[in-house]
Image 1 (cartoon, rainbow, N blue to C red):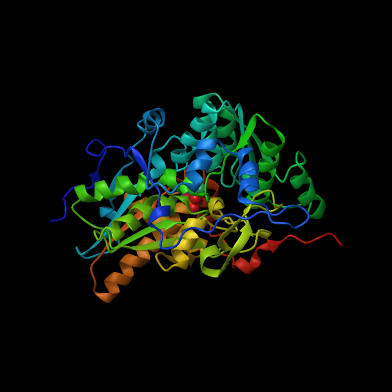
Image 2: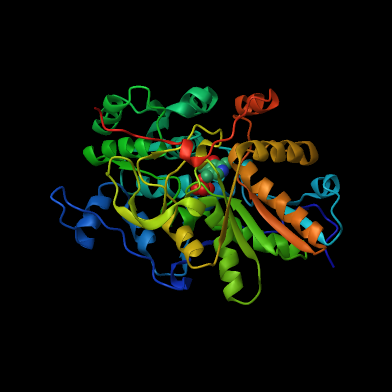
Length: 455
Ligand SMILES: *Cc1c(COP(=O)(O)O)cnc(C)c1O
């Protein structure tokens, strides 16, 4: 019997006290990162470890490579999680009604927009800042696309008394002044990337003075700052194993909340930029499938302007533009790929989490690519039905969830759909204005510019 309630698990569900590490449950062990010296010789794992140790806390690096299935969440981190978690899980009853769905097709969503940053990103920003603080780090440098990650890390930095320096992709810096103001209000310093402050930024500007930037370029700048300053570390808001790990509280809560709803999803959907919110909701369901308790399909949704999983190659590639990071085995469009300036800035990354890439490569997760105008149409339909204005990134998951519901309806099948609503769109009103004025465009990934060497 399906529950008659709409909103699940604010007081009934406990916040998980462990993060779930998917690594020991993968079909194959993950491929190790690779890096090369300037003369082309491959670095040993020890040498790579030394390099990474100048960027990340020891505890975070341990988590990055851990084979332990469960990792305890520190009590101090749980205390901060408790200020906004568990996040609600809702049944989208009004949306179901608007779509005219029969009772056998139900849509649920996990809403991560209730965090102070308005997205899932604080789930990892808080532990990352905590571990840095424990190791005496006084400053963290980072990149941000849409400004979501920069906001989350700025809040976490403020909580732990750590300075935060943010390299914000220029197109977003210009499109989203309020995200910048938010970060500055929390005490962070914010630059439009590419900047003249780093070698990596200066190199890009020399080739293309009008560069709108990319996450790859901004990462190079932030890593350079951390590598050159001993009291400064770097933090990444997606892609890496420890980030996916921290996000698994989303899926663990969702499983408990779906139990309260007395329902079980047939499909679990999330958008993918670097893969962390998808990992957050999907990895615990992957484990549930291994336990024989779920048959859910896991669906990753990406923009057609940056279709890493659906059109990229599965190979070793750099995580950034300038080659400051090790190479990882993942789906990639090439580390010099600069996607068109779509409004879902958080989805403009050339690569993808190696763990998420591996699940797709092994056939354990599916991927689809969608156009941004269709996403905004879905976002409006959702906002008008459910009352929540979604982030442009999250609208990709909404569209795919609606498509799943309609496909089931046409096929005369039952289907329970759970998607992750990764954030709210209160800072994305300029994008909505563009859409409402009928001026939004779609881009093929071929439209993404590739950096050229100067003539
Ligand atoms: C950053 C962000 C994303 C994309 O990042 P992932 O690591 O793929 O989750 C999606 N939605 C929102 C709201 C974001 O802030």
